[in-house]
Image (tube, rainbow, N blue to C red; front, top):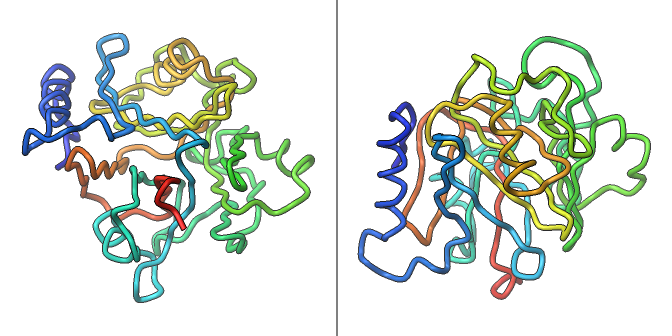
Length: 256
């Protein structure tokens, strides 16, 4: 199901309905929950390193970019292990990442430090990365200067929403550019907070939700308009525009 373009209050009602589960089953296993921030409906998904592992996924069974969450589900050997998945970085027309990208320890795209137009080049941008149960977000320059070992997974995107607890200098408090958007932030405990809006939202409001509600110091914008979520426990599988890199959060208890 997808709720893109639905008015804010109606979208929240749909989120709450989905949380009850189509079959009335137990939904407590889902790490995702609906929230309301300044009248904007969002979905917040929490990845805890004690319970989850994170990996990047790009290609489907044919070796080409999967381009959708549905295709991702069909390409995973054990999709029942998935806690949730989300689009995870910007990409070109072929679905390939335009920034630094590491999957399973294999670097498939080098760090992109070029200037240009668009959200990705609204500097500073940043890198979401990790190895084992250590997950981090750094600005691209910080990453280049301080990360000496290749991580197990990484995705470069932009802009940064929060940098050391402060809004990106180019972001307004609540600007006029409002779209469906998704992002990720890391808290002091090392947990990863993934957020997707259920109605158009500004960069500034999304950044302030991470800062004020989630108490996150560093947060990275993943993408907008195309943003999609797969939440198996609640029967949610968004579709729509073709995607590129995908972030998969897997239940560690079942992970091999």
